[in-house]
Amino acid sequence: MAQTVPPYVYDKEQNDNFTKTDYNFAEKQLVACETLPNPFQDEQLKDDNTISFWEARRNWIIKALEYYEIGQKPMVSRDCIDAKMVNDTLFVNVKVNGEVLTLKSHIRYPENRGTEPIPAIIGIGMPAGSLPMQIFQDRGIAMIPFDFTQVTSHTQKRGTEPINRLYPELVEIGSYAAWPWGVSRLIDGLEICAKEANIDLKHLAISGCSFAGKMALFSAALDQRIALCIAQEPGGGGVASWRVSETLGNVETLGKTNYSWFMESMRQFSDKVDMLPIDHHMLTALICPRALLILGNTDYEWLADESGYVSVQAARKVWEKYGIQDRMGFSIQGGHMHCMLPAEQFPEVEAFVDKFLLEKKDVDTNITRAPMFEHVDYMKWIPWAK
Image (tube, rainbow, N blue to C red; front, side, top):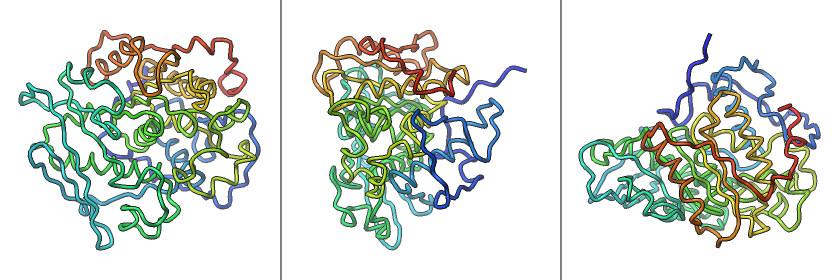
């Protein structure tokens, strides 16, 4: 019996399997694992090779990620949110515990917007993140900048950030739980203002670079309404594996990362990363079965792109399992400035945009380019994939 084609995107922040299984991490006995943990091995679920298993398996990975690394991303009832459009600017008010946090984003629409819903990209910090705006302008795609400082600053002071007015108890929350919360609330606002905003919510992308590349990755991992993630040079704490990074040089390891982005309690693993039951190939795989393009830059050692290469190869095994590997690609190369897309990567970004935002079926997105790492034996890190 042929397996049905996995969905390209979902209409909920998390699918219905998200809360069906409970896990007690506080009582979990940690066991050292020197290689990358098996993303398919679950204590309570049987792998039946269907996408339904993976939809449920994501539940464990997300809860583990929140417990060990970033803290819980708050869920918000739609009753606590109102939104409005004013002259192409989206305003979203989130009301919790008697406090209000307002998100504001001026949407850049294409010149000839027409009447049909318009595909869009959420850009971290800028309209298209660090990607060239022309790629999206030329294709009639709207751009929605996310001002992350409306949620928490680049280097948060715990307990004093805008999000803490709503959740004063979440002092230890990492920014990579808080910022994705803000992205999800923007998407809520787009849903509430569906008629006025006229954004095609089935074709919504997100992108950012460096720390914002990590933000885009976490945001797409934690909100299944995002159809395409383009994570540009996300480095350590993003796509790179904590375990593999420990074997490299001057790179962003678990012990050297910016801890305002994570929970302080994650430091307990700084000298024993092999005890962490998850790693960032699993964070990356949370985006499956949706589309993901990872862009790397080998000119910057700190980005740990060899570690990122191993991690994306491991994560890609999840897309491969369901026969949708064309939805996950990576391009890692040097010869350009940090967060400046080189000419060689334009066609790769354009291919993913054309296929997953504009539904051009004949576009080739089987992109796995990392010439500097062709010698790297990534399979030794993923024995479960042999």
